[in-house]
Length: 393
Ligand SMILES: Nc1ncnc2c1ncn2[C@@H]1O[C@H](COP(=O)(O)OP(=O)(O)OP(=O)(O)O)[C@@H](O)[C@H]1O
Ligand SMILES: [Mg+2]
Image (cartoon, rainbow, N blue to C red; front, side, top):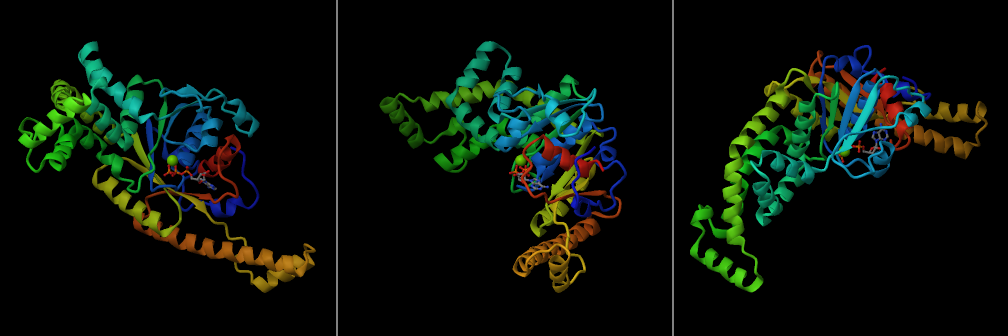
């Protein structure tokens, strides 16, 4: 894969990474989940991994979640839709990466739509489906649950895996303060449909210990007044909600089990994305421990946005003299350049220490791939190819 620029390789050199980089880590993988803290580069690396694997001849689909607008445009995701569509390979060819026989497909997760699709599939008939989808309580709650995105992402992944249309699925994960949220997704799915979310809501609303049928007299009265004044019949909505969902319970449980099985399948592998700052590194260490405890497949770590050390051991005074003598810079300009190098040096030293900490905590058998901090945001085919150059080195 082409696309490396001068100076990028220094920061991008991998610590204990296998030859072939991420392609080697993903050998035999059908589902790759890129997890990590917020803002570390999950969406970017997912897209770059999918692109690079497509260039290796696979039919790959990347499921992105809220990509930055320009990246969405680059992947042709500006059109609405919750289904995969094929990315035009021309932009990648122009950026120096030939996808050959490989195919890159992409979709932008629509959490609410995915959730509704799930209901549609599980509802026994068209009437029940319509009743649920138009139920006020369902609409409120599904919006809130789908809004968390974690389990809709995995539900979508499950649907795509079931079609067996792709050689590899790459899942970006939602911006989440807690990288582990989506591991609980199947559980939360079940809890939602067991009505626990609603029970909790009712407890807050009508006092402790009150389920639907036991709604307090005062609440019942209040709802009655509400109905008379506004025409909003929440009580009927609530009982309809429970009646309809009750009928779907078995289907949901089975689905949650399938989703859980997919997460634990030997063909599913997690890649842990982090930046070299201390907090995300600490989260990555914690996340790795949890994955291990849950016996989930782990592919390796990706440290993104690692700063290159352009100054190295050189003394700032020597650098200034060199910039003046050899590059012909004025002394004030040379001083400013040297100051920038010194700042980068400090960041590079910090990054090195944090990466060393991560490597030590994850253990020698866990491969780590490093991606340098690029000058620009990664928002187009060229940027993805550059990132891929490091991942697949
Ligand atoms: N190696 C890099 N060098 C420079 N910029 C980068 C690099 N990797 C990612 N970026 C930029 O950093 C920003 C965050 O990246 P990205 O959206 O991939 O993170 P994320 O983990 O998906 O964030 P969120 O948790 O919000 O979903 C984007 O603007 C992206 O272009
Ligand atoms: Mg993202």
